[in-house]
Amino acid sequence: MAVPKRRVSRTRRDKRRTHWKASKPAISVCPNCYQPKLPHRVCKYCGYYNGKQVVEVEE
Image (tube, rainbow, N blue to C red; front, side):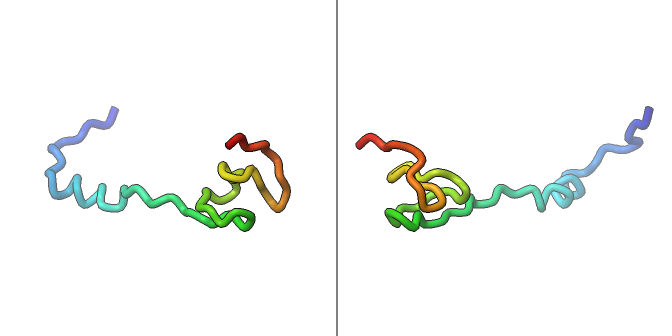
């Protein structure tokens, strides 16, 4: 089994981790009610998806 010969320094470890970043979620606008929503999901404000009402929204 492979075992590291030396301890990895903080600098080397952190250089490897520089690209591990959380990205902001993409936000689109609902074409029906113009509220922000996540792409490829039903709008939680009006219940529309792809130009059709698919969920009844209670207000």
